[in-house]
Image (cartoon, rainbow, N blue to C red; front, side, top):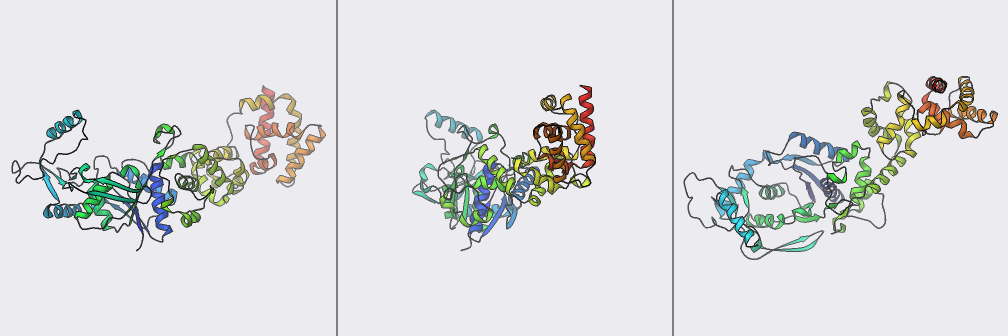
Length: 468
C-alpha cells in the first residue's frame, strides 16, 4: 500500500500555526513512508472563502517548504461528483429529504435544551413518504444507523468508541443543493485514495459520522490520527491574544522557516531528548504513533532560541535569501551599493536572534542615520573623546589598505598613545560610525562601512560634539 496523506484547509483566513503543524505531520508521515502528500482546498463555504486566503495558504506552505505532490484540488470544482454521491445515497435509502423549517428546528432545539437534553435532530422526516408540498424546500440528511457502535482505532488517541444512538441524521446537502463538510470529505478522501487522515482532534467527533457514510457507500475508511490542540502559555487555546498565529506573521517577525518547522515538530512529538532536527532527520525519525495525546503549550522563548541557533549555524548564502525580504522592508537593496551582504551576515550572525534584528543592525552600513542613540551619545560623544576621534581619523585616512587587521592596528595605536583602555577609544568610534552603542567588532564594522563613510561619520561626530 502506498501511503497517501492530505492537508485540507478551508480558505477563510491565513495559514495558522495549528494548521501548519497538521500539514507538517501529514507531510512527514507521507515522506517517511515514501508516499504522496496531497493539498486540497475545502472552499465550499462560498460566503467566507476568498482567493486571498487561498494565496495566503499556498504562500505559507511554500515558505515552510512543505511541497505537495498533488493538487491543489478545489472542492468547488467537484460539485457534480458530490451531487452524484448524494443521489446514490438517496437511491439506496441511506439518505432522505428533510422538509423541516428553520422555525421547527429552532423550537426543537430550545425544547431539548430546556429538558437538558443534547440537541439533535429527532428524525421527523426520516420515514416521510411524500413532501408536504410539490415545491417544498428541503435539505438532504444521511440516515445514520440507530443502533450499534462506531469504533475509531486512532493512531494517536487509541481506540475511541461512539454509540450510533448519539449521532443524529446530519445534513449532507443544504437547501440550495451545495454539499456539506462531512459529505465532501468522505468523497474526496475516497476519490483521492487517502490512506491516512491526520488532523486536529476538534474533528474527532466528525469521524464516526464520516465512517458511517463510507460504510453506506461500501467504502473502506482510511486510518485516522487526531492530534491535540496547541495551547498558549496561559493554558488556553492558542489564539491571536498570545501573539503571532499566522505562519507568515512569523516570517515578518524574522523567523526562519526551518526554525518554525523544527519548533512545530516538537509540539507534541519527540525523539529522546533531541531538540534540533534537520528536515532529513525529521523524515527519518517521525512516527505519528509517537505524537502525544495531551495538548502542547506554545513557548515563544523556545522558538526564539531555535531561531537564533539556526541563524548562527546556517550558511550566509542561505540567510541571504531570507534576509533580503527584511532589508527590502527597510528600503535597502544591497545590490545597489554598500558592503557585500554575505560579509555583513557573517559579522552579524552571532548577535542576531531574528532576521528583523539582523536587518536593523545592518541598516547603518547601507544608509546614513538621522540621529545618535541619545544615551550612547551622551556618554561617549563628549569633548573628552575629541582627541581620540581626531587621531583615529588621521590614522585611518592614511591607511594604504582598508582591511580589518590594519584598522585594528590604528585603534590600538591611538589607545596606547593616549594611555587609554581600548574601550575608551573604540566605543566613541562605534557610536560615531553606527549611531549606537552596539555593532560587530569595531575593526570589522569599519571594514564593512568603508573608508569614505567612516571618515565622513567621524567628521559628523566631531561636529556634533563641537555643537553640544
